[in-house]
Length: 323
Image (cartoon, rainbow, N blue to C red; front, side):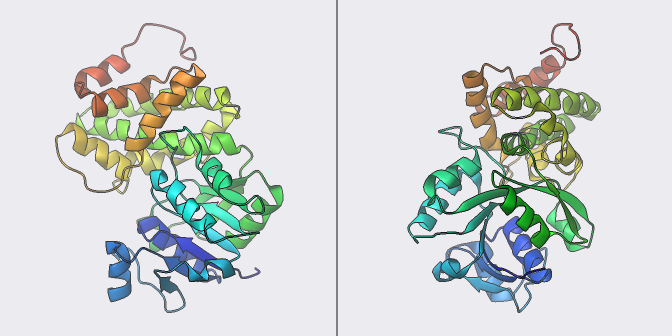
């Protein structure tokens, strides 16, 4: 493996894990966080967070000074923050960098995929890729392996990243549909919230139907947006269902449980924002998304969760594979 200089932006649980992982497999890594970030303060003061200890070879920084020397720039922040982050990066005058987005979501205001946001803001000499798929920090840190996917419009970049990032802990697959992978990955968080709502209402037996119908409706959206409908059955979406719809580590599932039970949940659940973007895309593309619409009505319109979810699975009789 040819070791690279990598600058990771975002010191939450996933960004910190990514920096730890890339350092572990032999790259030279800097992890950036804002000075006022509680996560960065904890890392700098204690050298660890609740999931892992930071090795001495991993640089912690609150400055963008080292970003120009990096071969790769990895971003792991909340999806709605990405536009500001890449705008700040553009101010650094970056050229000929590979930017890897390790995050899932869709911009609410514009409906843009995350790779579009990065490409629109950065100089054309920079290349963009996405790193998606199942896995939880808690499991990776105790040595439990998983499979993930890297995708990009640039085949050479995709091949280089997979060869540089693969290990026994994470096996990477070559993505073949950037649209489908990004939309599928973002949408599975909304399905995860729906799963949590079912769990919170003691309707867990409906999660099998939720998975079946969820892949069906998101596949239709992917196709309408110009992607490959079958991508929904890959690691970006269906392959991530176990980690998102069933795991106690899933923020989106736990958020869904808390929401229907009237409890506060203080951690980031990307599906809460993504469902607003999906609702707009649904109308723009003329694709019906019943599950996403149900989640939206419960969270943003105050509709009764029990009746909305039960009605969702009591729709008019029809062929299984018709909308």
